[in-house]
Image 1 (cartoon, rainbow, N blue to C red):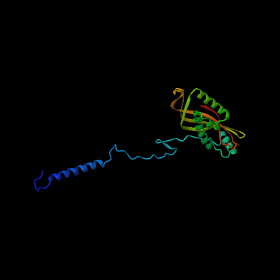
Image 2: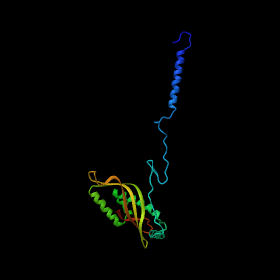
Image 3: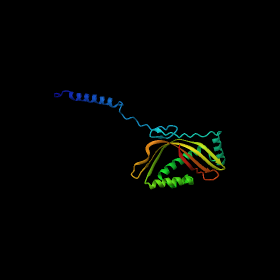
Image 4: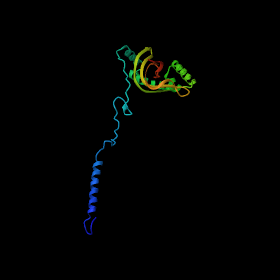
Length: 217
């Protein structure tokens, strides 16, 4: 493109084209595009419960009876016998026991159930577990969450105490037959309301409240 001894015009043109392309490329890459991945933000804990899969897990509703009510007065009388007893502490322990008993019964775990049930209740649970085993069935139960737990009644005779609680929970519970098909229950999440009666001798050092009766409301 150049004669002998002339200025290399072709090199200059190539250089100008290269600079132009570089500037265009920089202008494009230097701007944030709509499909560009945004920075990952760590989840911020929300007051009221732990964050699970990006959402706050609700804390169960645990209303405490009015101390001036007859029910509240009965609970205060229990606290005068066992100075470590409070309604709130009882509800905390009752929820933990509820989870252990429900899952223990589903798994047929007699060793886990025995310390948490009265002898009469344990006999009933044992009969149900044995019948399930004899039929070749398996129960699968998962407590998704406890929605509410509250004290609805209480009685005190000497140092013998009984407290009835209402527990509302979301559960997935079903029974599989020998062929692995569902013979009872459903795989869908179901809201279940239970009424449980727990009892304890407050004068004894054993702090365990044992399940004396259970039914669905």
